[in-house]
Length: 226
Ligand SMILES: [Mg+2]
Image 1 (cartoon, rainbow, N blue to C red):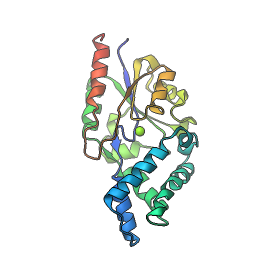
Image 2: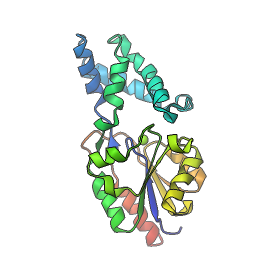
Image 3: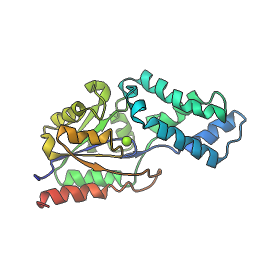
Image 4: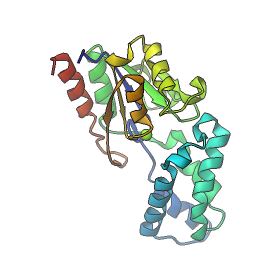
């Protein structure tokens, strides 16, 4: 395999951690005078998150515009109404606002290590808004060479077109690029576009290590002919 010259990253749950959604549910319910235990909120959130990752849900095109995104997720959040009626719009605001997401502790060191190796860095996201200001807000603005968004390309992951567009922006052929992401289906679509793919499994809470050193290991192995 030829050496990797570019690494493309998914954003959510790959470089940035979501806010503690269970905590947000407890807080938002509390403001409505409803007491929800953390355990119940956690179970509810796990259910919502699983429901949001099904192929049927992904096929709704929620990442093609902010309005579709709000509508699709608010409808999923209505599951919270069995605990606190009317909570869904408030949950959307608290959980989905990208400003509230936080980089993992190994995000910045990994991006810097890639740049030090002369490897280009891209972000490929289905989030229906620009992310450069989110990176800038966390002091990471200069560490990404190009952002590729589904709403710009008109195609969402796993559609191969979005990965090809990202490679084109970085002027790196697909077979010299590695896609890294937490979603086996959406991010794994990179394989159909001719890229290599590294799947980061599981969820890591805010403040944790995402396991991004694995990216450096794959890059280094490709360069040593391994
Ligand atoms: Mg993700």
